[in-house]
Length: 86
Image (cartoon, rainbow, N blue to C red; front, side, top):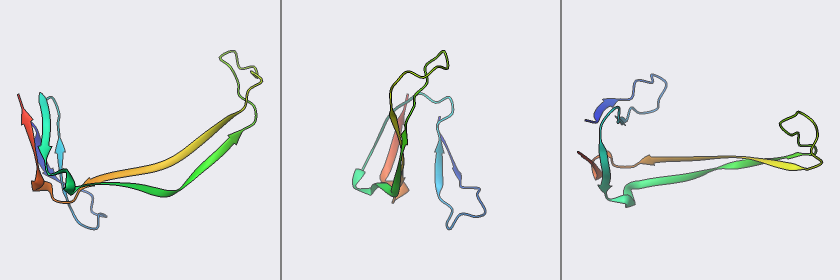
């Protein structure tokens, strides 16, 4: 069964309840998804890699790129969702 507990971070601006699924048999989360917020945080950074290396630690003759971006999500109203547990 899912347990609810308060956020224990003393540096948090405001404590929020979190859901710890643990060993529960969670089937579905249902609710008002208009209360679920997804945020793309910027800036993202793109790093060009001029020389890629293979598994044998030798250059492969290829170039690459590494994109680092941050995405966050949260529930605006915690009581807008319920979890169905088997």
